[in-house]
Image 1 (cartoon, one colour):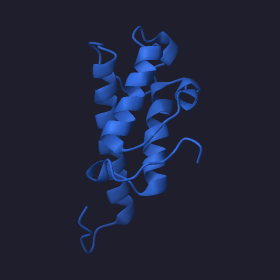
Image 2: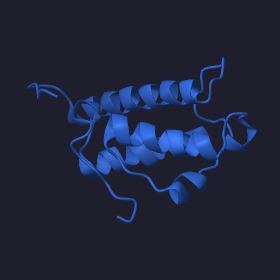
Image 3: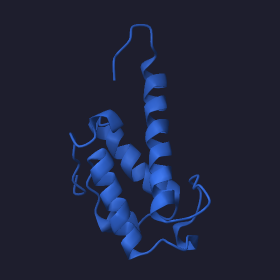
Image 4: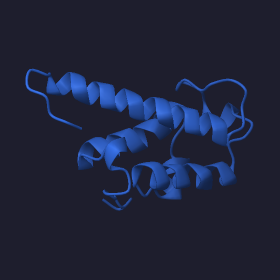
Length: 111
C-alpha cells in the first residue's frame, strides 16, 4: 500500500482489515456452498457444510490468499465464523501481511 502523507495510519489499517475480513467471509461462504452470506457471529457447529473437509478448505484459503499457515487444531478451537476470521486477520496484523502481500509472509501455527 502506498503511504500517503496526511493519511491516518489507524484508519488505513482498519480499512485493510475490513477488506481482508470481507474477502475471507466471501471465500468461506463460497467454501460452505451456502446461499446466505456469512457475517461473522454464526456458530460453526450450526453450519451444515462445516466439517473436516471445510477445515482443510479454510486452511487452503488462508494459505493461498494470505500466505498464512494454520494448524487444524487452531481452526477446530474456533466456535464462530468471527473466530476463524480473527485467526487470519490477527496473524496478518502480527506479521504486517496484507492482501496486497499475500504469499510473501508466512506464520507457522507454532508461533
